[in-house]
Image: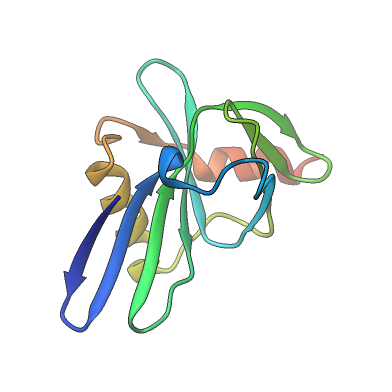
Length: 124
């Protein structure tokens, strides 16, 4: 995990290995997210959580292994499930944090496929 100070704010950048154990947190509700595809073809969620005026966390998940489009739940290779509570993030500040976090956490060559993915999930 790394923490970056932005004025009076601190944003943490974590990957799935820095998360709580899957057994302790098997499912997360996700409100602020983007979906990226790596050149290898693997898909990963980039999540912004607990954003306040002072703090926030950007997390990159392990690779997505399953999608249940009817309930909008994705499962990653770690076994954790993420319930997508709404469409992909579109607010400028949050997008900057998500995209910057993806780059900082090693996904700089990934392609954002969030809009396509949400369209597919919404058509079910």
